[in-house]
Amino acid sequence: MLRWFKWLGLGLVIGGLVLAASVKTYIASLNRQEVMIATVGSTTTVTFPEAGEVRVYYFGLDVTSGMSMELSYNNQTKEIAKISNGKYIDTGVTVAAGGAVQEKVYDSPNFQYPAYGWIPGDDGLCMNDDISAYINTAEAYGKTLVSIQCWADFDSASEGEDYDDYVVILSYVPAQGDAACKVQGYKVEAPDNIRSGPFADQAVRIAGKAEDKNNPYYLQGLNLGQTYTVSVEPESGYRSGYSVCYNQIGCHDNVNVRWDKISDSFTCPTASASGQTYGYVDLWWHFQPRAGSPSPSPSASPGINQAGFVIHKFLDVNKNGVREVGEGTTNRTWEFEYRIDGGEKQSYMIEPGEEEGEKIIVNKGAKVKVAELGQEGWLNTTGAELTKTLADPKLYTFYFGNWPVGGAPPAGGFPPTQPDTGTPTWITLSLALSITVITIIKVILKV
Image 1: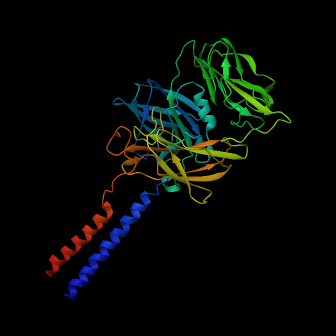
Image 2: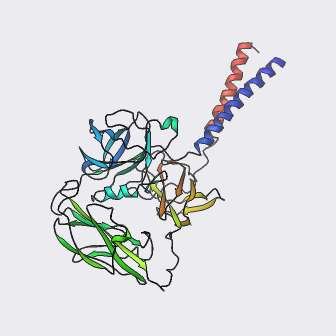
C-alpha cells in the first residue's frame, strides 16, 4: 500500500508540472504583443478592394539596398526584382475587385534573404520612425493605399523584432487620361505646421467644382494643363497663406509661404516627375494666430507639446490583422484598459455601432499601452495588447480587429455576455494526464 501511495504522489507531481506549464502558456497567450503578420519563409495575403494594376512603393529606413518580391494571383506568380529605394514599380499584376494577392518579400534586389515579417504602419509610424512623408508620397498619385507595411529584415529573429527596416506600400497604378490631376494638401498652424486647430475643418474649394473639409483634403478629377482657382475659408483670429509644390511634397517650410492669401490660381502639371501622364498640385494652407487674438477654446486636438490617441475597433472580415476599406463596426460594446508611461490602468469604451471611442490627449513622447478586454466568441486578429510611443504632436490610432469564431455574427452581433463554457481545456487535459500516468504505473506494478 505504501508503494502505491508513493507512485500516486509521483503521478500527481508530474500532472502538477504539466498543469503549471499549461498555465504559463495560457497566460502568455493573453499577453501577446503587436502581431507579426508574415513570418520568414511564408507568404501574406492582401485583399484589394478595387480592380486595377498593382503598384508597389519601397522606402528604406535602416535597410536601403533595395528589395524584390513575388506576387501570386489567380494561380500565377510574378517575380519582381530590383525595386530601388524611394521608388515604385508597376507590377503588371491586374486584380479584380476583392482579389486576394499573396506577397513574399526579400531583403535584396535578387530574391535573397526572405524578410522576417511586417506590422501595419497605418498610423504613420514604423516603431518610432515617422513614415508619414512616404505615405503622402504614395497618396499623391490619387489611388487607394491598400496596405502600408513596416518590415523587419531576415536577421530579426536573432537581433530582435524591429519592424523599422523599410516600408512597403501596395496600391494601384493611377488611371491615365486628361482628368488625371488633383489638388491636395493640409491645413496647418504656423510656424510648426501643426495639422490640428480650429481651422482644420475649413473648406477648401475649386471654383465651380467640389469642396473638401477634411485634413488632408483631396480635390480630384481635374484636367492636366488646366488652371483652377482654389480658395480656403478664413479662420477668425488667424492670418492665412499657402505654400505649393508641383508633383512633389518637399516645399512646405515657412520660407515659402505666400501670406495674406485665401485664394489663388494654380495650373495642373502635364506630367509627373516620374514621366507618368498624371500630375498633382500639393497645396498647403497655413494659419498663423494674429497678435492679441484670444486663445482657441480647448479641443480634443493635440497642441505643439502634446499628442493624442484614439482606439479603433473594426470587424476584420478577412482576418489579416489590417484595417481595410469596408471593414466597419462589430456592432457591440468593447472595453479596453490603457496605461500612460506605466501609470495606473484607465478604462476606455467603444459603444455599439461606433468604431472609435473618445480622443485622449497626453504629453508628447508619452508611451501608451492599450489592452483589449477580450470577449468569448470573438477572435482577436491584431494582438490583444498594443504599445506606441507618441513622439509627434498628432493623433495616433490603435487598431484592434476581431472576427467571430465560427463565421459571421448573427444580426445585432453576439449577446453582450457569453455563457460559461465550463472548465478550461488546459485544466481538463492536465488532470486527465495525471490520471493516465497513475493508471499506467498501477498496471506496470500490478498494484
